[in-house]
Amino acid sequence: MPIDRKLLEILRCPITKQQVFPLSDVQLATINTEIASGHVLQVDGSAVTKAIKEGLITENRNRVYRVEQDIPIMLEDESILTAQFKDF
Figure (spheres, helix red, strand yellow):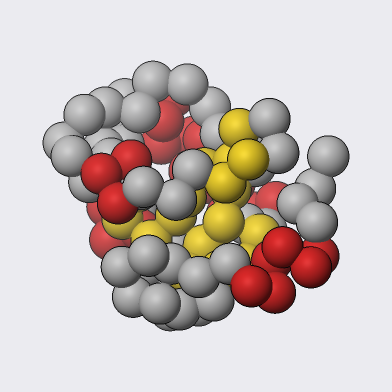
């Protein structure tokens, strides 16, 4: 189930304070392809090993937060920097 629109209006990246938006299908597919190939790291350096079903991306498109069971995981160490994806 998608994140509630009202919650999205108030959510902000805890690092940059930017608004966050749902990942598009294309962005999600790109990230999941890279996860499947074993090339995605969280900010803390740990590998992302399971596909993301839903995620949020910062306004400047530099950071992704996964959403699990309709709960945004807005922790810096568990975020994913998009610089590791070519042409993202």
